[in-house]
Length: 221
Length: 221
Image: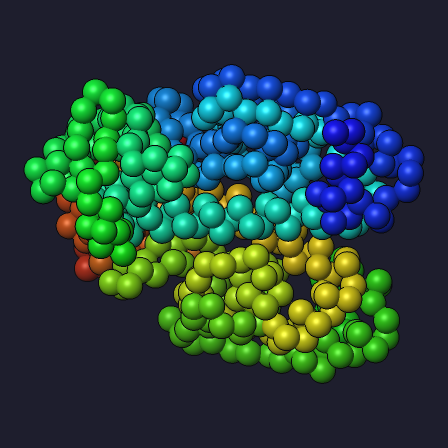
């Protein structure tokens, strides 16, 4: 599909642009494919905007010691705005973006988008609005970390994973889960052992199979 | 000072408004005084926008169990936008705002501001831009909580407090500090005992006196 056809449906501001501006954005667009676990964006560089067409991207923070915390995921139809720091100048923190599974994206150069957004207020508005929506996602993470016990967070994580993947098994190592939740591997292993001893999950080399979804939901709520 | 004179200097969008819109905003403005520790805004109600004229406001999250985490403070000249949830519809989380010291504010009705912001894109843009700036503050808090050890967080907190108040003593109880940092009182007491035994602070009934600012800065960095 040519970009213009897609953008016309996707961007609420498209009709406010001149033909020249539209062409300019399309000329600075490309199709990018990321393999599983490939890095999409690191730190404060202005990589550009990514619209997820298929697959799934993960945004996370990374500490100097290599500790990670997942902020949110992007599914097909979602747009990644925080990877275009030149568009949102008041965003002063660094985020990292990886592909969780093989993912196809449309990419618009950050500089090109920024040029248009400085001139057309509707475009600026759109970018800010997207960022503010993500603010709410991050507040949810903060709330979880500060106010929730780890068993609750793990239950929510497992339920979210199986829902997102449409399976009953989370195919991740304890190490991977602990990175998502920003804790130590030992904490996850201990917690999963407890979940398994209660018969709520089954832990094997293939991953964590959910046996009692209702019980996990109870813990999550 | 009449509101219009102040707003003209304060709001970058003021010159874009019609005379009617300006008058409308001024008519829906008021001067509000908050006593120390008085609540300014609770939860998701649309209280309105507050511009701090004197004093200091504190924004925080509150769990169901009454646990708090400070997100950021507002000083004279700062504007509180998250208390006007009707202006920023994509903000879906609840914040609480208290006056930390006696504070004078200008308040604009959330509904009035929202009405104008729906019509004048520059106003909407201003509100979103302020919210996105605060996003960066909150990310800093999240980073501190997830990646920093408590001694580092406590050192930063004590240094920020004495800088904000222009004194060398933090006049707060361990309980109050623990609420700011979202941890248990015992953790703060233990940490302060350690700081005191090293000669970096002096703990008395009056509060925590900073004896070795440089050492605290070392821990903070």
